[in-house]
Image 1: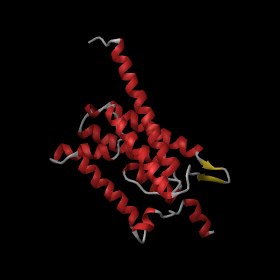
Image 2: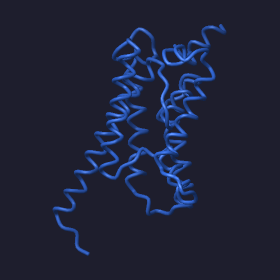
Image 3: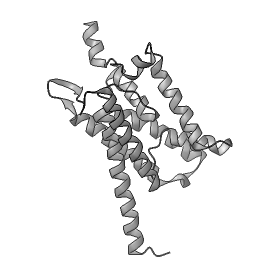
Image 4: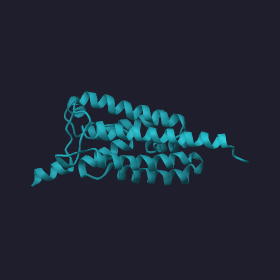
Length: 203
């Protein structure tokens, strides 16, 4: 079937919106949440934990985890679950790596510099940007992968909503970080140790 110019422009528009939404999501993580050591859910939350513990780029972690899940989904669900998901995974990984590279403290090489230092404000702004942008991406058929892919796989074999699966997975991920904290308040506003700070303490 012949594709009209209007259809092509509509599809390009969707990809532009998805790209901007993914950039905004990654900005929320790299400019507010991660540098302030604030925990979150999803693959980005796992990437943040890995970054704080090892110093490994969040973009690399996001890409590796999502690539594995994507391959599993291709085998179980098939290619029908969307090319936009693969595109979103790649772009999110690229944006996370680039933003993490440029948003750094000029006085401390390799340390991310938060846009705001107040933890409550950072949580509101970072969480708001990340959540809103993911919602926008969903409206255009995009997906950030990660827990979304796991939810699709679970829903294929179990009569449970994707939202509930994602919620459970996010609770588990955040709980993994909670184990490190002593109190709820300490967990929410905790200054998570980074790989560089741990090396300094050992030295």
